[in-house]
Image 1 (cartoon, rainbow, N blue to C red):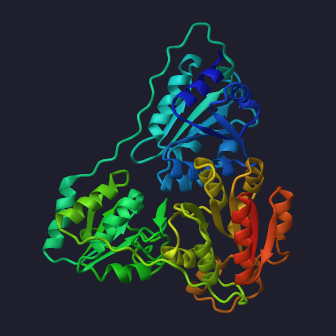
Image 2: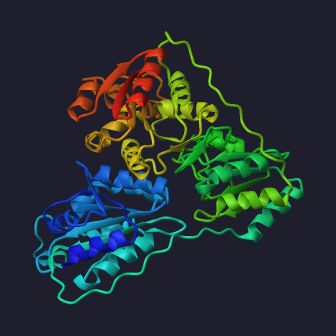
Image 3: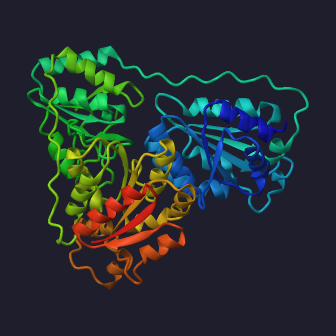
Length: 514
């Protein structure tokens, strides 16, 4: 046995199922070891940002870490944007980063870089392996570091010579890892309950597992109390929706709107979220959406948030929650697509327990509103704001639950950042439907220009925000990666395309002309 084989055995023994990989020369011993151990499935991607985004989507749905395998510092750097999103989502991920042989790296070869600094920018745990005999322990320590109640990213840097080194004496088997246990603090529950009993008006911002089925049911009970309002965080890692569950709308994105809402209440209760901060700073608008003196903390990220919400509802004798109405009235079939109609048609088409990965504001918000009346499903959003997450996260989610239909509701500009995911989806033949909202522009940038005071877009502004010279041929691009594709322009055409996609249970791309 060599070091690489020991590491792969340790990964499999620790419960790691997938290795999302884009390997190079310094990872060849690991590639050979993966070929000899069928317990850990390697998944090749054409770009490291696909690997890390897929590991994020997998971890959010599976609740445990996948492994990524990348090549030296530059390869890892290609995946950092989606690791940023995963860090903000508190997703457990284990990165294995190949490095030059320890006897070669000091010569400063062309691909040498400060991998520890790169990994440290997105990782809570970083280690450079120094002994082939301890590679199994190193890997298991990485899994344990990632697989916490508050999930996090762990990165293990692995010199090539340690991977290839033969181990002459047996290595003792590693003990199995235990899944993390979530808890909540009863005194925090009582602090919030006391404010409710005192008649204070409370607004809750709910995240983490507070947006699970149990969490939403408890939230629905609290919503029945006078003077209480509940919102989901603006970009949840995973949110259950539909199927009669209470509808927690997302806290608005723009700070002046969110501040206006929160200011209507005496106190802001954080339940599985950090301090509410504006995404960007705007002159004359506070960065904090609510002053710290008005914040109450019911549960931290990584706590048993749903349990805390339920305990609070019991403590104040909140009424039973009432099932939300279901059923969606479809828009006129012959009408042209709009963001609102896309949201309605997709929500109506969702099968039970589907997963929707949303990236982009064009259709994302209208869909989230409509989805409250859909069949029971889960929604993933872009927690960190680094674009290029939506399709890889959907890909990873599909691998976490084989056979579960996944829909990627994706804006056209951000889709190009990790469009190579189409090849991986086709290769794995997963039931993933990619819906491209093709408005051929960066709509968010145009909205920000308007907020900045620019009302008349000249040629230079359009040159930086329009995607129409040339327009991307989405069906041709998808087919080039092995994914069947079609273009729809009306509500009826989208409805029919979704019906065909569900019936085929195979990957496809639908370009929605808006």
